[in-house]
Length: 318
Image (cartoon, rainbow, N blue to C red):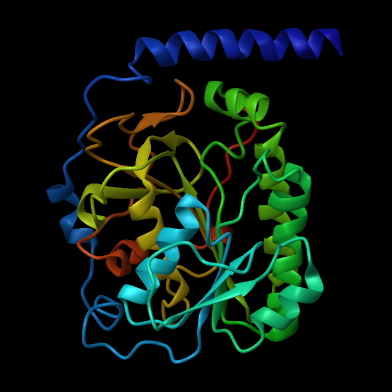
């Protein structure tokens, strides 16, 4: 056990030094030429599914954690797109912008009976709930068991999709940022990973799709939009990203047609952040680019470049 702890400590110190030397905590962002990848994006029937003039879903999309900073933006983004929304909060009162398309309801991810009632009749659900030390809940109760509850209810009700917002570095607890988040968040990344794994297993071969979004460092700045945002897969690259862009991507995934962005997990960061961190490897021996980058002029076209989880080659404990 002591040798294991010493080994992890050595990895952390070596990684932290190498990452800091490469400007992980600041410096100019790394541009890799959006123009060079423009040919990878494809126009077509998916490209404008969320644009003005398109028919929006008549059944509502539920948002869990709707009073959180990211959840509130998810609700508002869906309403802007003309999608009816159920804003589920612990209090039953949505504190965001009012809209005739938004219905406030009381709901808690730890209450599976309430979830069954409130998600009934919905098209999809966005899981934007997360551990908050001020509520008295533990990460295991929200980020793990809460997502398990939502997955089971979605399966029972035969929803079209579950969109889960988790975190970058969720599979890299030994990376500097992973160690930091687990320390200050009472092991929250461990619970988020358990939640992701359970979500995939519960929904496997059920016909209910899922999309897992792993944002980098969340910033309360204006949205950059899809052209200045990049998706990645494999949990090897991290950066900063506005909450508004995460919310927009989550909303687009919740109403995406067919298998677009379905059964896929991806990281998300800004290519040109005004503040925070530009894209960097989580650990110095990871490649940048990773080979799993995807972007486009619309969220739908960025989704087209994603691979389903079963087609991603996982990186192990190294």
